Length: 308
Ligand code: ATP
Ligand code: MN
Ligand code: MN
Image 1 (tube, protein in one colour):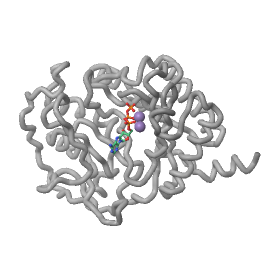
Image 2 (cartoon, helix red, strand yellow):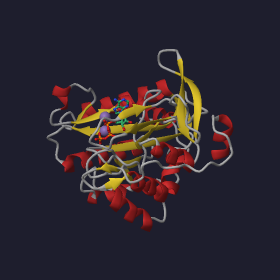
Image 3 (tube, rainbow, N blue to C red):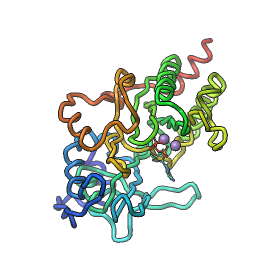
Image 4 (cartoon, rainbow, N blue to C red):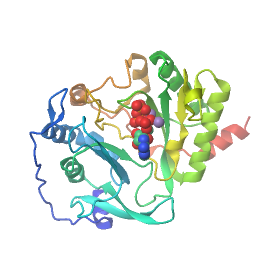
């Protein structure tokens, strides 16, 4: 896939070493984590991290002054360009077009880290098919007073309901406050169909369990409930990548999990840079192994519903 990316993108095929400037600079003051530590982290997890981001248009969040200073959400290639990162002109919601960045290989990631990126947020689509989603992301955002056991029960319920609809799903602890439940689609489906499905699924959850779920973002309604943010499923929307560091105190990591691990999960930010590295050293297979091979579509859902 990297070769295809290089030929499509703005990247030349000549390998160029990436010079890390200011490797000693402290990025996470609380932990004393330096820019070089971040390079080393992504290098160590690269074989697990890359499959989830390669050839997907992507936003990065950069913290040039460390995580206690302002951050910059960046989806376009900056003026002056990036040598190791793919670029693709895609149309925007507004009808205009802009040049989006996407990683084509490990060098792309390291160059983005050199550029002070900490968090990586890919689209649920590939750059050669930006109008179709191959991943539906249900972003579970618990209100401030929702106990963790309820969040886990909500995710488990979603797993079961999706399974009844004929859809396999995958679990991620975000490294923040909530969970992501991810449904792969093969073949990829047009964004409007995907968003429509995500919206109706969120509304069904809310109507079945009104004390647990809410499908609208209004602050008042979210109190004491879990917001199912289905709006993560529009063209151009992103979700944090598995194994991405988060630019928050403690250096948490977004971790893909097996459903069998949900019961033991202590919080959405259970994994940090150090424990993620320890886990991945022992990891033999990705918890999401096979996700891109699963052939399932929203047609299966329609079939399941019409069979009733
Ligand atoms: P948490 O578990 O704390 O909610 P999260 O990664 O799910 O962590 P959210 O704020 O729920 O964080 O956002 C979900 C996803 O939506 C993010 O991972 C990010 O990719 C995207 N996102 C969030 N805020 C913005 C924004 N202002 N503009 C564009 N995309 C955003
Ligand atoms: Mn969230
Ligand atoms: Mn959200």
